[in-house]
Image (cartoon, rainbow over all chains, first blue to last red; front, side, top):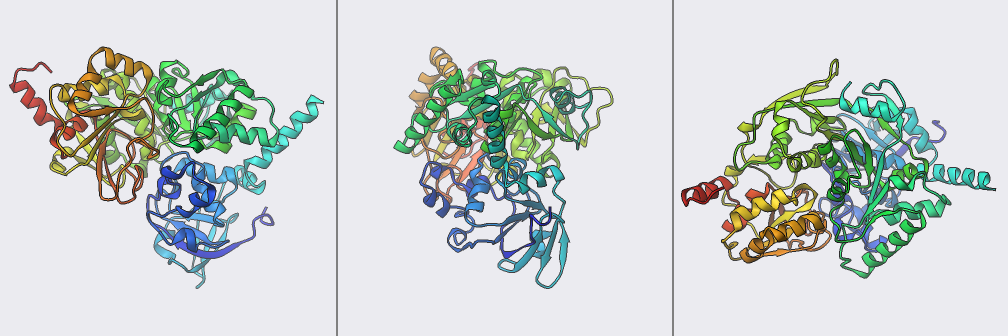
Length: 173
Length: 410
């Protein structure tokens, strides 16, 4: 499994507590073209995020990350903008489920918000649940259960659905 | 077993389920609204799934972007309509029928003891009829519709024992806002809120639906009033609270988080630009009756806008027949069709930078109703009506005391 998840190394974007789905994916833009939707991600709390985030960056949140609606665009927008993993003190339930479903790893890690600095390079081992700073200090996150790691390993639920469809097709013939 | 354990065990074909376990369950019902139906069914079409596991268990309700405020929304809904037909979803409700959660209850698409999932976080609402229900995202919904199954982590439960009866001028909204403070997301996160005790029988169905609707604002996975007041034998709860309903007072959630709750009297005098009465939280007949009881024969304050959305066509018609809509419109309200528009910041009443809204809905996150520089306060329909009349946050008890002094029966 660890072959499928190399240790992720990226620049941290430090966000606070209660980052909501309304700031991750604002309601007024739900039917806007994708490029425009992505421009408004986190606009209310980090106006520099959408234009500054790079492929492989890591989002570090506080408590209750992803609180709010069931909109899957909240984790999807982060993934589309290149975010490799979200590490937070705690997650809202639906956000965490949605993230796994679309293949974006999320790690619950006590103390991460108070330790990691905005902009610093951190390494995240998704399978081992380790978050390591550049000075070597490490935090242990909660391990992702094997059932969820298996979904992540397949790249989320969509590849699983394709397999089901292929099965249905073969039984139909 | 707790109610969550009992229902999840039953729906997973197990004799017993224990908090912390993962189970694969067969939900009784699946609901999608217009924002996500096209995404879910479009994904199934794209990956080549030709049939749903059981279309008779699926309900689609158009309630968010209705009537469509843009060509994009209209096109999105046309796609959803076509896909719903193609996948044989007969339980399809066009715009105007109502806000999906209210429609599910009115149409009896959810019953006591059911397990229901929907593409909306406020799906916890159905706990008001004793169902176990929760929100999921669109990719998970696609998987659930294709297979008829979904995985669940059996949650721990938090017991909330209710006693007494609600004091005058308070409602289910004040109870759930008070619980934001008493319990909060550190305790409720991903758990099941289970309401028991002698106080439960004094709450109306509308109050229970409101309470369960906002259970999710504490992060809870389920919020439910199981049948019967008594505690099940041998059930283990992660935490337990007792609340005397008669001790509650009107409460307000202040910007920008739902847990930022204070008694209304601490906020009295805060200037307000817009008042919103509606949503799946508080757009029911009881709520409109409450609002009209204060607004009847009065005018809203100059400079204040009052937006009202009944939660369903049935509620709209009943309110019309009872003269409630006439009283609200005469007082200065604009009454919109049943929709989620203002609550989720989609349309029909967004806020400009610097504006303040007090609403009966469920979320006051930054940017929820339009500008990120606007402020949102949440309260009961009575507090909302009193606020519209005063033009600033007002305690409904002062107005009700005035009515009593004038000899108006309450």
